[in-house]
Image (tube, rainbow, N blue to C red; front, side):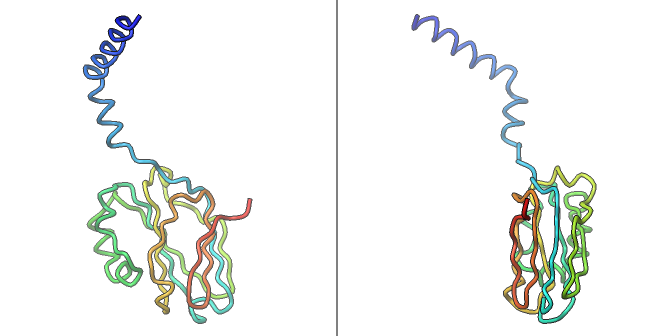
Length: 158
């Protein structure tokens, strides 16, 4: 019985070694993709200290692009054109202008969005509290709420 189990395991290992090079490569390169399907933005009446807000949603298709993307919104907006040109098809950017007291629902997501390995949100905010990049990859339905001096990211209500 033990001998039969050992032969089975060694045969399985050999099979994986012979046919598994592609499988191993696939398994090592596999990156989960975004769950995001719906995106809504609510700007409170005093959002961004009563100023319009530019929000860029960056869909990352090439996981190597993450190392190049800025950690703050001011850095993103200052270098956006160069980053988009340099990263080309590695990212897709959805830009939205939102004014205080408005709601944007069911934003149309870019082509192939479901294959994004990360989705980041950058907002052009006056206050430092709203300037950090946010990772919204795991949300199925993301609600971005623009407040006076900060931004919150939550799941939409079902």
